Length: 451
Image (cartoon, rainbow, N blue to C red; front, side):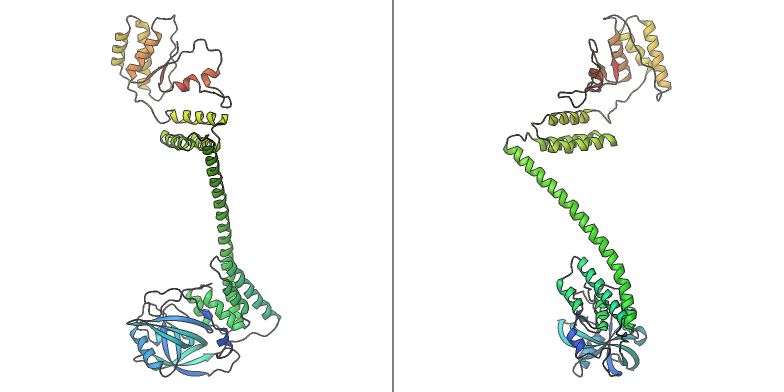
């Protein structure tokens, strides 16, 4: 539960230092609620950029502006008390009384250390809320009359005790949910028993927007401060619980992934020690590369990834290893995205048919008619040509001539003597030595001749 204190002069940012609660100072030397404060003081006013110092906290401040440095040089020898007031526009380098908020904090300078030639760091202890009233000096720095404001303490009843306990419990719970929280911060919250002191400490450490911090600084009623802080804590608790759940889910998934990777490495080491490695890792990487280059459809690609994972963890001595390997190699060898360009030239087809075959005019004419229809309707699905006749009459050579005229590859598949349909459509993968069917094994060609 830390917030970075910004420089009042927008100097280069320093290491973030959280406001520190000074419980002893709040109990002894402070003019906090319950003590009779001096109602009016005349103090030098130090403007701050996007920084609010709450009573009871110790905060380092970087001072770089010439007017602010002059203020410290002339005021600190006479007294250690300053009025710290946030300016409305952080970009204003010379704020006047109208450019400052009406409410601020009277603070005591504990120490000052020169940081650069034109800048110093002061450590201040917030004392009380104040209200800036009448400016009495404008140059070289602002000095004004301020009214010290005491907090309006709630009645010491059960409602106040319940509100305090709820606020403390929510703050401690939020601290424990944050990964960067320390045990000292939890002990600090539990060690604060004063109601007003606890609200100021939480307001400076909950990471509130400066506008909300300013509103809490201006609020004198402690019960209203508790209500505002409780609403902010509820919101932060909801966010912190979601973040904690997400971190746990990510860590759980990461741990499972690490566990699987570790076990997989152990299996590989054991296989290598037993001489059963067989270069599985290289095979898997080569198959993954070939499958990526093949351009498989979405469903086939998902199945291929699943089989690759299975291949990685399957021992080479297992029969499933060879079955899975053959299946993946077949997938990688199929021409998923390859297709020969087809050109239909009827004159060339007639010349090739006349060159390769003498006679057979009726068959040639039928083939030219088939090609003419294909040329007129390229997207259509034409009939399958079936050549019937005894061996040696030219059935296969006619198929070869058609392939030549179309510029396509020609594949010859002999189905003579086949009695098992698995030879055509392929065997089941569960069988050892299973192979794809004849059509798949000869799929490089698109024009088939079946004698």
